[in-house]
Image 1 (spheres, helix red, strand yellow):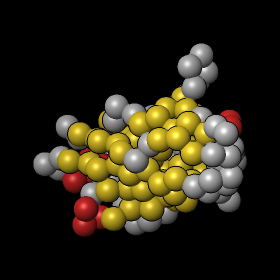
Image 2 (cartoon, helix red, strand yellow):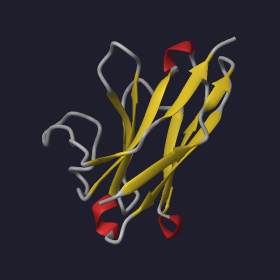
Image 3 (tube, rainbow, N blue to C red):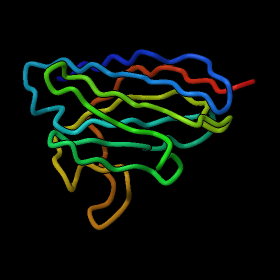
Image 4 (cartoon, helix red, strand yellow):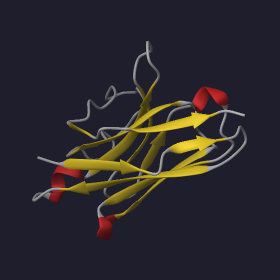
Length: 131
């Protein structure tokens, strides 16, 4: 089992920046070799926006590419999502997820290997972009 705890959500004005984090805890670190961020707005499907595998390979959804950066601190079992140039449409509940998958299966971008169905999920942290 993997426990995931998100933090850092809040309110920010359009054009602003925010960094959220997710700490993973498990007796078996390989279970969270792949970690990622998803977001969901009520009434809409959950959207995978960024992933990072244990070797640091990343994938991004087109909706956030160039604005958001995912990173990880392996020693702390923590990932981060730095969000710049925030827009109203970035308002959502942001969920951290983890899985034992390695690249190229560790991805939020649908491609040759489909898109990863993550095994473990956090409770989410709300990000609101509003003036």
